[in-house]
Length: 449
Image (cartoon, rainbow, N blue to C red; front, side, top):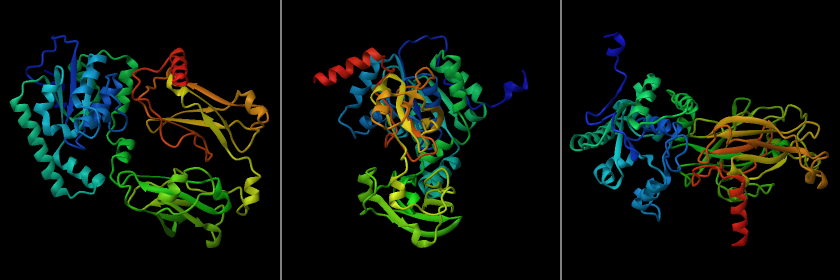
């Protein structure tokens, strides 16, 4: 026996799991406490190609089935399960709240196989302290109560099971992925294996950012800011009734704090609905701020600033007047969102400088995925005098690059205040990207109706 055989890698199969038993139809249920590491397992399954409904990064929870289970949608849990069973021999589901009704859930699923995920109670409690602003004592008690529910189910049930330590899974991720594939009887491609291994990390930034209770979102009109007028909106994603307080820092020093409580009118026609709900405004020209100063906006209680980079305009010696701003080429563009159902990102983009092609940034599941130049000819844009030559189109086949319809896609212009859509785009109802023929048929059917 080598020393490797003595290493506790943190996962094992239940005694009744038969690796030789080849079953074509199975349902995998990922079970664990909230913030206990279930997203690591669910994300690994997702990247290994297992169908998980409309699950998306960073938590990989199928909201369609989960909301039906929690009776927060018009669909019945049994109906969604039947739908998935009809379309997929193998599929998986993860929802921490499921631990409260495991016996009932098991009876409603086809050939259930359970993946129980464990994490030390202090880590769970501390994650709740950081992300949910809960007390550590209450967090420890809640974790132990929930784990007790899981253990009681394990003691009384006899379903095939895979036990996983989330900390060990991260430390020994190659062995974990190998064991997960063995338990689920998966035969992933090398690309899928690489995606699953790359996905597993000790502190995934997107998960840490998105799962905190004080996660916020917002927007700033960077084009208008060239006049010295600061306009934008801000709100808490999970507490939209709470008024966000926006700190305005100039060159690292706090200038003032604004209440994003709406009641203003934006100068542009973007985000008009947000202006009345949670908009804010500040005239920097009256406060001695210069265009070259670095302006950072931060929502109190959140840990990240509103923009990735400080706002500054070093090329301006003075703030622009309204007429001067109107005389500039405003960045503009469009995304063919309907055609995106084919897995092809297509559109056009025009930056401030016509002599240089605009650069289009594509993000997938919150991460930078590709940057492409807008250099494809679009004759109609020349005819409409939107671009002098018409060479401002862009196109990228993300289907060929492994992006899935359920992934979250964002398209914007690099280094310009120009977004082509207000919220990330995904198609969780599509198992596969549409062919162009299928897309055309859908378009024609829509017009006919």
